[in-house]
Length: 116
Image (cartoon, rainbow, N blue to C red):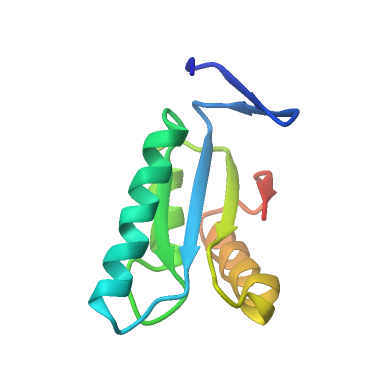
């Protein structure tokens, strides 16, 4: 994959300014947390050079807010958010988008293009 453009299913991404946020629910289980982070690492390797970061909706860190801050610090202008939840329901439809919107607004990036 080159550093300029990725064409995946007719979606054009500039690899230098697009970041991917993978959101897990969060669990008290260290095993569950480690499994989620291992999956994110595999996906990050597959998506390189796109920056891929993990966040948790609740119970664990890093938070969505902190992770979006890191992605913006890396220079992203476009954010793709992918909830990785077993039972998405309200979390994927309401909670994740609200937290993403709030984190972008706190950083003055609410007008950046997002895909959720």
